[in-house]
Length: 84
Image 1: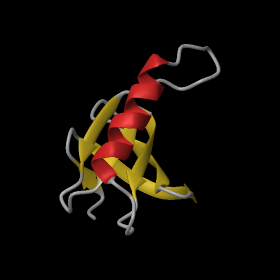
Image 2: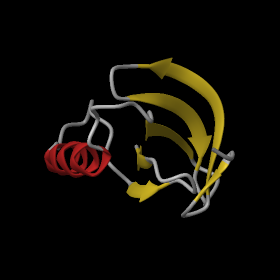
Image 3: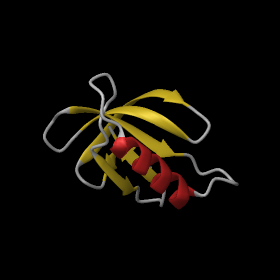
């Protein structure tokens, strides 16, 4: 995966890893700081289904202490990502 993602997002440092993906600090096309979660290429993880479910859930959350979903996409190597 490259440091540049579709939509003008750039990855910087890795913040953490979980069961489905890796979260990175990054910047948006406007220079704003964002968090970017990228699905890991693992067997048994249905990536399109993961993206649809997590994006759907995140888009419905409205609370001042929960970040908002800004963008979804797919990396050049076919891994879905979510931008918060």
